[in-house]
Image 1 (cartoon, rainbow, N blue to C red):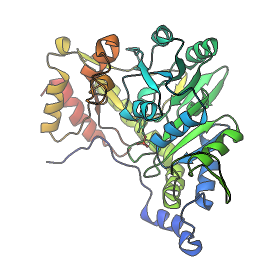
Image 2 (image 1 turned 60 degrees about the vertical axis):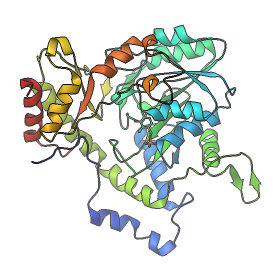
Image 3 (image 1 turned 90 degrees about the vertical axis):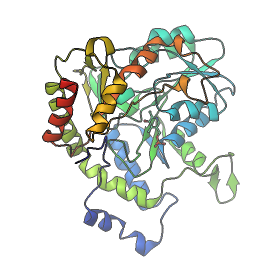
Image 4 (image 1 turned 180 degrees about the horizontal axis):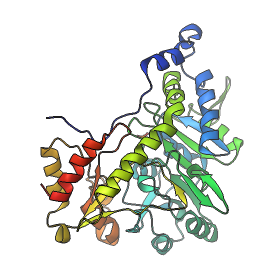
Length: 373
Ligand SMILES: *Cc1c(COP(=O)(O)O)cnc(C)c1O
């Protein structure tokens, strides 16, 4: 049986990559902010529409370095979402803060601003929202709440590569909001550097400090200012990034075609809910989540997941289990305090989404979902 995976990493033609790495075999400069790294950082800064940016070894490191940069009071509370990839929460805990979970909005799975506000205490130091599936958070209200309470905002923008939001009369890059925004360029994301990430900042002073924090805290040959890890991107990863960046708009265009086909084919199926599209967002079609209402659909998400698997179709229960149900967090938290997130985790499934997905495959997948077999 021909298998359909849930995702497929974007890669350039082999020749294009070989050409890109050729100079590395002459210079032997293969890491430590070499030529390719610097070129990629500048190209990404422009592409993402941000003022300053530092590359990192992965998206998780970007989150941890961001928390380090802001000099927040250790032990403080950071309000975040239980409906995310574990990296978001792990970054908070590993950096010495306490995650406090607010609930999400059913409509887009992003944090609900009212719920954020209800969780603020005198111990709160920051908010770490996630633009889930590439859906933009309510950045205006979150920014207003943070300002009123004197809190920092770090966006986990891992899902929003290339997303633009119409805000205050102009199209702005998803990484330009909050105090800092973090991207992941992992192989499974819309855009990849194999493994990689970036912290988007508002000033070059900040991005320079991130550059020190990702390199053991080294400032120059004789000065080490911070006790910091090694979280640098290497030149081969940067070369993959330079190649993939040339094709990312076309990749997103192909994903849009898959998205449009899915929406057409999955329309009006009782018990299958999709996230709505927004006029004020240029999307990247990173994921295609569907929500299965057991009563209305007549089958639960887990059963449909199994039926798809039996037909060779890879889906993912993304994000299930929710963070507060994972072994390492369940003792300390109560999932019933975030009921919308709990409901979403019980209903959600992301179905295959990548640029090379054929119409035939879409027909097969949506046929199974429609016929429930
Ligand atoms: C992928 C991802 C990360 C982590 O990025 P890596 O590059 O894999 O370290 C963090 N947060 C979210 C929401 C992600 O999807």
